[in-house]
Length: 169
Image (cartoon, rainbow, N blue to C red):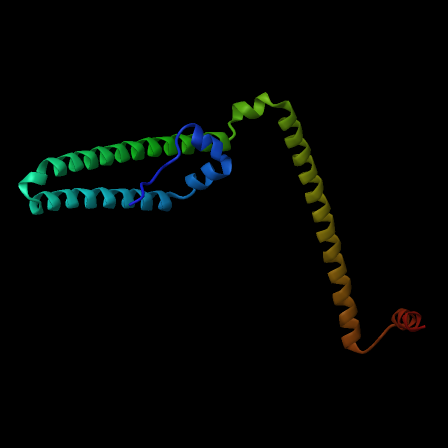
């Protein structure tokens, strides 16, 4: 059966940020790997227990060596698993800290502050323009309602008739 290998240290760094990020964003994948390792370790332990009971006494020393090797392998895998979990936790913490700008960082960066002021100014301009457009829309709606009332009343005025004539010709 092939052994599972996990990247550590420089190997993880050489894999690139995208791979590390995908590992960080996939806790279910990690949980599945841990379950597989635990299941494999339990199976090895069970096979080791069964094999010593079924073998003749002459093979006990061989089985003892095999069991010892399997236990060492299990211990190594568990240690590697712990190291990987610690590295993942460290990277998650690092990622969280890097993605949350602190007020101190913002105050230390004058370019960022200038850009923030410009964005706020632009937002205020857009809000004023939106208010003016909404007011214009309200006025147009009032005019439209008046024209609709005139049209429904059936008594068009002279100005109304001239506007219709100009629109048709």
